Image (cartoon, rainbow, N blue to C red):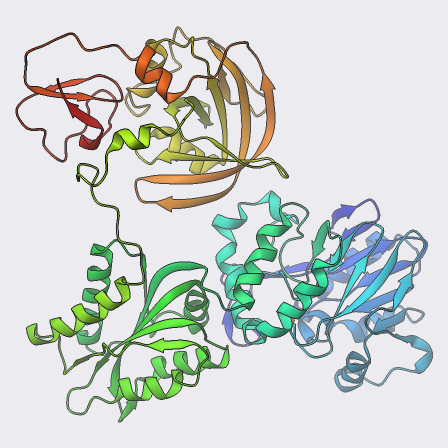
Length: 611
Ligand code: FEO
């Protein structure tokens, strides 16, 4: 049997997935498996790009024979000699005695170490700038030393503009039938594993990755074929930009990683109190118990966040074992460019803090805060001032949390001056249609065409989009009446099937999702490529898959809605507050700060006093 995927007209993936491997490189857990990618080019000459790990040799050799279909194999290009890609090279050379090995001089030495030295007439040794012509295609070689071993080559196909990138741009995780990154929700399901793969496998070699990125920027690359994980044919910038950030050791996100170890709970309690204090300041916090979470996950999170607190126990007059392992692993991976806080514990002679400073003091651009917390056995009231000092010092690096909207520093009317449009956002899950009103659709980029929408989590449409990754935007015109807004904006799809007996006309686009056909001038269908959690809302980034103009009329703006569509309140002498979104009136002297409009669900910040 065979299982292959076509990449281009004459290039096919013939690799395999190992889902039973416990520890990649005998170190890293791979709970979702790992793929070993190999590619076969069927040009005038046939070219195999790398072999695979022994674990998937059966499926690999079956795939190779199937795709060759009786043709001879002319070349095997070895980009990387690590056995997860080259363990089956010896078997390949025996099965295909006429194949020529194309590789670097360093890799050739390693072939002699792992197998037997190759006779000169079976080898073409190449270096940066050399080329291999196969018919329609010409491959040029790019040296990529230490990404991830010293012998590594990449190759670039000038005909189809494909970079064969060796380990770079790979990810942990079996492919599950997909081969292109755009076939899966990469950000949701794989970005974490791509980060963990990068940081742990090549994280130490940031300077070398930067060198390769500079070389790559001179090439016109339309596709990246790595040795693990997915092929990139769209939005290449999204993964290249991550590699740029990671290899410069720049924090990917502002936030605090708290890594702790705790033998009897005292250190954990102090770490959790630090986390709570930071959360209260509106700061993102991720916590890991380093005794329970494999170091590789914490190393990846340490690359990700701008600040790290290490909380640990003194143990055998040193640092608690699992924390010491983590700290040495971080230092070995060039832990850099961070602000660090320390919480140490020690029932009679706490020294962990001093020892942490010795390890991390050698790391580049790591600022260790003087505001250290020392506890003896348990957090006591007298320790809290030190914890406050440390968390407040960290908070100085973060933008202050936005005050509540009823704070006089923010006049919501100023925010309404931004010219928003208004849209019906629709989705479908398991045959159920739903839609809601939004004012947050924005065209993000032209190439590729991407749109962002921010959607309130309490909307059913939000959950449907999160689950299905697809939605439509119907662009309302200024002829849409207030009833349209009531229909889709003032009632939740959790309480009513909005499309069951709506008087509003609607139809379906190619993705099967409804769009509004009444007083709408266009609809846009989108596929989600990224989602980010912003507390009350999720911001979805999505690729436009269809966009059609379906009517005349000017697009409505929030200003027009406020001035001309929303009903004016009847004059009244009553005391109260009016919802600036839908016109609902709350009668009373004071509006409770946590009040939510029963019509449209907006909060107290969107109310103003009746005049
Ligand atoms: Fe995937 Fe460095 O081997």
